[in-house]
Length: 332
Ligand code: NCD
Image (cartoon, rainbow, N blue to C red; front, side, top):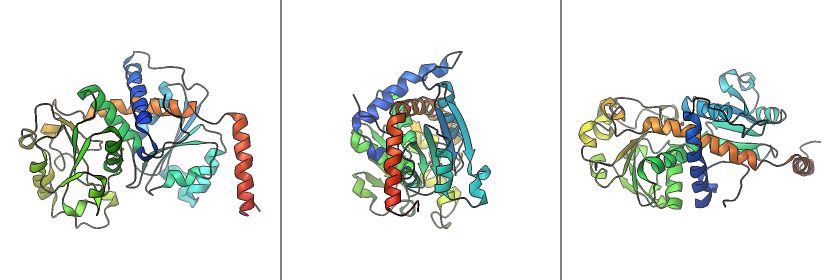
C-alpha cells in the first residue's frame, strides 16, 4: 500500500512504492480509453483546473481528457487568455482560482518551483506540476515508465540513453531522479554546452559522442532543443551539424540492439534530434507515450482526488493557515 499525497511536485518526493503504484494504476486505465464509450464515474463531482503559462499540446490535452473520461469537470486556462496578461501575479491568480474550490490545480510554468510556491498559500487545493522551468516533469516520466512497463516488461536493470538538450530538460532531470529509485541506468549524451555543470553527481554516465553511447542502450530517449530556454545561440554551430552529431537517424539506430526502443516526450523537431525515418518506424514508441500520458494523468488525478482534505479538515486547515498568516501580519 503506497502512502497518499496531496500534491505532485516531482519525482523527488515519491517513493519507489508510490511510483510503482501510479504506474500500475495508470496501466489499469489504458483500456478505458480504448472502449467505444470512454467514460467512468470515478471523479464525478470533482473539479480540475489546468493553468498553463507555457505552450503545451499533449500534456494539457491529456490532463483534460483524463479528467473528462473520469467524469470530472475540467476547466482550461492558458496564460495568453488569463488575467496575468493584465498584470495579476501568479499568487493572485492561484488564490482566485482556489477560491472557486477546485480539487486539483494542474500548473505549467516557466519558473522552477512555481507549484511548491503556490501550494504554500493554497492549503485546500491539490497541485500537480505539469512542468516547471527546467526543474521537473513528473507526469511525463511516469508516462515513460508506463510505456516501458507495457512495451519492455519494466525499467529495472535497463539502460536509458537520453540525448540532446539536457541542460534545459525537466524530463531528463526527473528521469535521473526516478532512475535511482527504480534501479535503471541513465546515460546522458550532449555537447558540453547542453549539459549542466556537475551533472555526474546524479550517478549517470556522460558521453559527448552519441555513437559511443548506443551499444548496450535499451532505450534511446531523444530530446528537443529547448530554444525557449536558451539564453543565446551559442550551444552548437548549426542545425545541420547538430543533427549530424546528435540526431537519431536509421544508420545510428542500426548500431543499437534489436530490442532497443526509441522514445521522445514530444514535441519533435524532425530533422534536428530525430529523422522521420526513425520517428515513423516500428521501433518508435512516441505515440504509445502519448496514449499512456492520458492513462497516467487519470491515475494521478484519481490519487490526488482520493487524498484531498475532506471538508471538515479543510476548514480546520484554512483556520490554521489564516492564523499563521495573521501572525506574519499578512491579513492585517
Ligand atoms: C516536454 C516539456 O514540456 O518539458 N514536453 C512534454 O511535456 N511532453 C519536452 C519539451 O518541451 O521539449
